Amino acid sequence: MQETAFFITLAVVALVVFLILRKWSWRLRRLKSRLKSFEIEEELMFAFLHDLGSAIESDTSVKALSRMIVDGIDKVVSARGGAIYYLSEDGKHLVPAYVSEHCPPLIGVPVEILKRAERDPRVLESHVRLAKVPVDEGILGHCLSLRESLRVPDVKNHVAYRDAFVRYDGDVAVLLAPLRHAGKELGVLAVARLHSDGSFTGNDFAVFRTVAEQSAFAIGNANIHREANEKRVFESELRTAREVQHILLPQAEPIISGYRVSGTNLPARIISGDYYDYVDLGQGRHGIAIADVSGKGVAAGLLMAMCRSVLRSVAPGELSASKVLAMVNRQLFPDIREDMFISMAYHVLEPGSGRVVMARAGHDPALWYHKSSGTVEFLKPPGLAVGIDAGGVFERVTRDHEIVLESGDCLLLYTDGVKEAIDGKEEEFGPERLSQVFRAAAVYGAEEIVAAVQRELKLFTGEAPQMDDITLVAIEKR
Image 1 (spheres, rainbow, N blue to C red):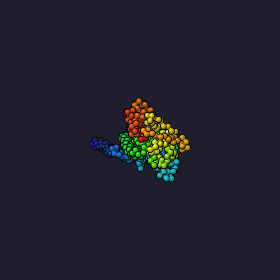
Image 2 (image 1 turned 120 degrees about the horizontal axis):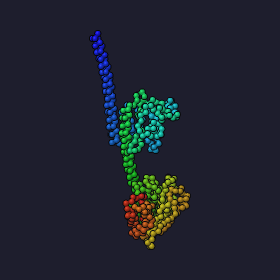
Image 3 (image 1 turned 90 degrees about the vertical axis):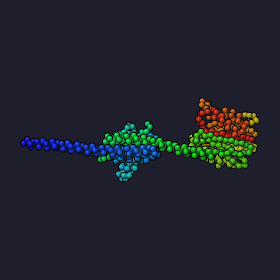
Image 4 (image 1 turned 45 degrees about the horizontal axis):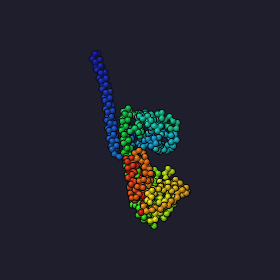
């Protein structure tokens, strides 16, 4: 009897030990499986971070980088799919940059789209891949507004989808993270699983947040590289445009019987809105133009080129300066923006005689140096700027004004960048100072006038930056 009891006890102990060993064996296998999963996840994560680092060092486009990030994170956390949305330029919408092929919808769908999708499933797919999301709507907007990562176990029950006109019907779990770089909102990154795939674990969420932070850094750097490249391309194009514009300006001074002419253009930026030109009118006559387009930069430079082209097409054969300006105005007016205009002056020089027919379209008055008296006169014939009126008023106001230059007399044409140049105390160079410099240099001729004005401007402004384009044309009667 005692022997039987001993064997029963031994059997029970053995069974307990067996069950304990079996339980621990099962736990061990389960632990090994989890460790293996962690190893695989870690390998995938390191591979993803390596690819991300390579992308940062290269010139990977934002579109390609977005695809790499979403597909890479999908693998790391075993998601069914994912998407990345970027903030629009106006900051009012989240715009899909990449939605992976099998990603469940991450946005609510209007009822009418769902009805149309019953007949054609492509309607829903197209809507999901193209629809912009207002920043204050849906789980994407909710994530962006909170500025923190979210784990949403069941999207359809989220507070963001309580709208009767926007529904969400899928059984989907999602991880979301706002993308920020250098304090700037970039967008939202999300990955999703169907409930049938299993829920996201706490470890999945932790890994996702870490990878999302690295992704935001990569995207921010990609944007910086892209903007820098665009800036380099733009600056290169501007330099090319400047070279072309320089060609449009006179390459040599004109040879006019009885006169000596000298001109220069000093742009404040790469592209100048100032313009001067010499036009051969035939029979020894020449037209001399100077103009200043309102504003600066590319728009002003393009309008300047248009003005030159029109002037050269209408000036030959016409000896009335005001009629030339009238034709220029009529051709340019339809193409000039309402906030732009051109101040312009045009002069027709008759060879030998000293007769000059001039017209002024809202331009600064020319300076006339009289050698006989040593005085300087401001010439102010009436005129309206080009581009303000279609033609009727312009032609009534803008008239020819005729003068006769004596031997030794000089004219100085200039743009407002000369008199409006400022020094370190923000004092303007002004017309009176310009008149004094002109009178002192006029006795030495046209070239010295242009050189002297430039020297005095440099001495006056010192280290102050040039604020406007500067153009000078001096005409000397020999």
